[in-house]
Image 1: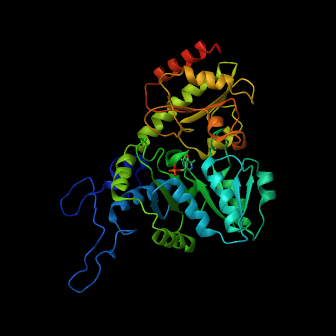
Image 2: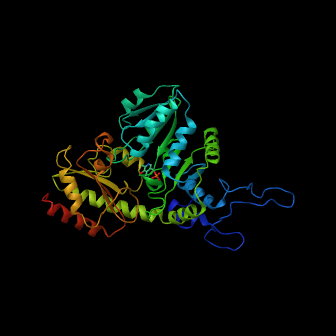
Length: 384
Ligand SMILES: *Cc1c(COP(=O)(O)O)cnc(C)c1O
């Protein structure tokens, strides 16, 4: 592939052209069965649909390109992709490091997985290099899982530095790159071994598709084991969804850049209100800003959080949420429309989200409308 920008590769879906018809959009192959030829040979090594349906291969090639990897695999959800990594790469007795702040459902699942599989899951503050280094156990830590910016406070982990420490201890490094998206961060270029995506978020981008993906830096033995896992586990994305994903990724770069520009403006605007604490890695005084500026290129993402009132008090955050008109009161992020969510209500006290925190996912509405909605809610709520 020529040295085009990834936005160019995205727009043309890697310049796909159907060899027979010249169609510029790929067909959806629905067949589960593939006939052998005259000599009883398989064509293109295809026999049966499970992981041999060709429809998802374009989306996989696009993700491989965007992440600068060697290969990619689609899964039916982000969780299916993430859990495949833990189940495949860990054996009983192994030690794994996972961020103490990060995607809630994965942390929940890991606690169950750890007790059933006799794997030692240790949650660590990956934003603090000293505690991260101290938690590594050379020879025993087989996997390090990273997420940056991390849900829902958007803390920044130094991906290059943690990866180097992990590799020195002999651990394999996987990064959940859902929040940054390959538009802003390419962890494989920073040394990570594997990238995981909830394609449900920015990659699909319209709130209408559940999908996941893994991308590997090199086609190594762990990758082959992951391939086998997907084949035997049957965790394959259906052709309709796979097709929709490649269609959505054609606009990935424009969508994510637009949403992130709005998010940066909204964060700066909200920061002027003294009663609000705004969490967004693009703000110059955010704790992780310097590292974010190194490892995020062209933007700082389209999610931000704000804190209002006492840290253990839900009243003002819940009040403000009720006054918002334009933001859908919904979980998730990365869709065309904006969402607001009170994480503490979802996770409960054990989840670790501050009681006074609201998470905003910025969509593709006119930024002025989003700011007006926030300002009106803050005024009605008596905050400003
Ligand atoms: C949503 C999400 C997941 C899980 O993905 P699903 O597609 O919902 O299964 C994992 N990590 C992060 C950061 C997410 O936001």
